[in-house]
Image (cartoon, rainbow, N blue to C red; front, side, top):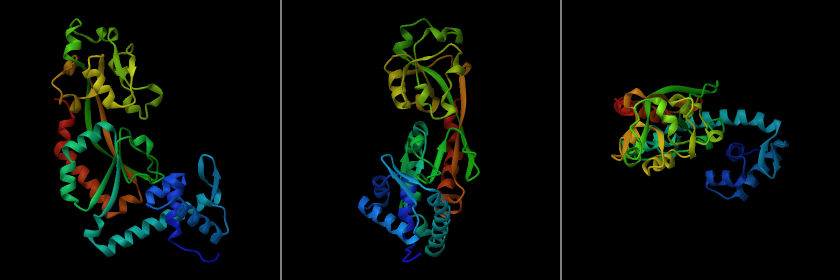
Amino acid sequence: MTNFAWDDLQFFLAVARAGQLSRAARQLRTSHVTVSRRVDRLEQSLKLRLFERNPRGYELTSHGRRLLASAERIEAETRRLEESISGDAQIQRGIVRIAMPEGFASFFTTGLLVRFATQFPNLQPELVALPQITSLSRRETDISVTLDPIRASPYHHEKLSDYTLRVYGAREYLARHPPITDREMLPGHRFIGYIEEMIFSSGLDYLEEVHSAVRAQIKCSSLFNQLSAVRDGLGLGVLPSYMARRYDDLVEVLGADLQIHRSYWLNCHRDNIQSPRERAVMAFLRDGMARLGHLLVAA
């Protein structure tokens, strides 16, 4: 092994997690040519092939997978060293990426983002409202809020808050139909819901809980598209109560007699939980939900 440069590891890690030079380059804010050159240099220094190049991108070889575990430990130790030296002012600098479902993202933006910006003025939050496209294991996100806990051994998970969903319809839609007085009337209505094969969490599969015969006739992968379709009077839909109650044109169907309960979970890689920055952000989320979590649960 000759001319080994430790800082080449950050380029290796970025490619290992992104799987593509262009994506890794965007994350590192450099060019894909630079990323390619640094990865090639690392392979030449180690005299090992770390990636298989193919049309889909870069895939780790067996040597690459072994190096990945070591490189991540070095990365974690380097971060802790920097934070211990620089103090709190530096800890709360830089980018923190938080993945969260669309509904929780809307709640965070309207209820917590101003306080977050005030408490962490030098921290740049990146909110990913489609958590299924990011991966904690590939370190594409620092913290995630999910509908199901991530129970695998390298990860920490904890319950963040419960929330309630109900069936809603637009006032003008309900005015066109006979009053709904019990669940047995629901299969006679058109429902808006998720595309079954694109449901990324079992927590979103709740029409069976409404009625065993209810199926979605209008399907959207986005919760906000479903909300718009319900408000436009195209049918009934299951929506988080904390979102639906913002709109005067939406009415609960069967009220408290038809409620669905779910939970939000806070997750991070166990290496990250040792970082003062991630700990501070997680503590902020816990505190925020301790103060405002009651708004997520319908009365």
